[in-house]
Length: 173
Image 1 (cartoon, one colour):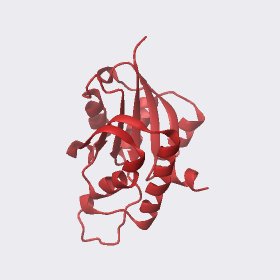
Image 2: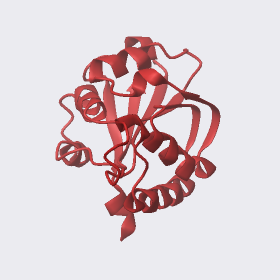
Image 3: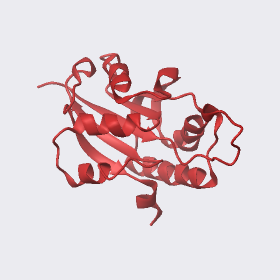
């Protein structure tokens, strides 16, 4: 039986557009985004989120999202990877396929549209209610958990099962 791996995708929390002079990579979180990271942090504590590797886009809003949740995430290593910023689904998939075989679980913190497209590609024909929710959109602060059977290097379209899809608004109630 092939090993099961876990891939978590966390789209950065809501960012601010208050200062239109800032380059896109330097946009910070909005107050709503900071509130969302607090909700996500509590959720991560409640599920005991434990990952081998966190891969975070170096953009300001992704770093601030990580800062808002990192105390609740047990992880062995964190890298800030420029390839995540602005990555397409195909580029993200290549990055995931390149993960070391000894990594059993990874959390990637990044951006749309790459994340939404990647999640949709990976779950393929899965018709669960979580997938139906995913296909309604991948808003800021979304946390998706996918189960991957087999090696990272072999991950292909339809090669994952969506285990959970959590939006900050789901946690606010």
